[in-house]
Length: 93
Image (cartoon, rainbow, N blue to C red):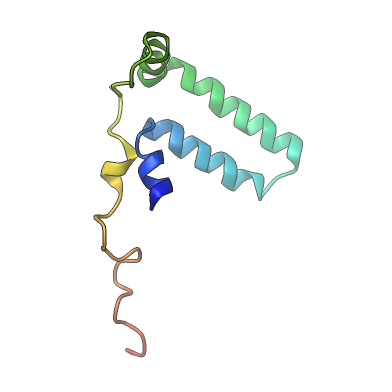
């Protein structure tokens, strides 16, 4: 859960693209995976979140993400089931 909280502070598109790159790494050869990751990385440079992130870094402050909400807002509340519809369904036909 700590990792999810940390990732929730980052731009949602960048987190989704990082996850997609990791998933892709299991499917393709190394060279293809690196090319895929590089394309996703370059595509983020046009985002408002990237511009805000760089400005915040130079100003030594936390970024205020403008394009998308933090990923943490998309996570289920603490204590909620990770798999909806699965709780208590063991042995039920």
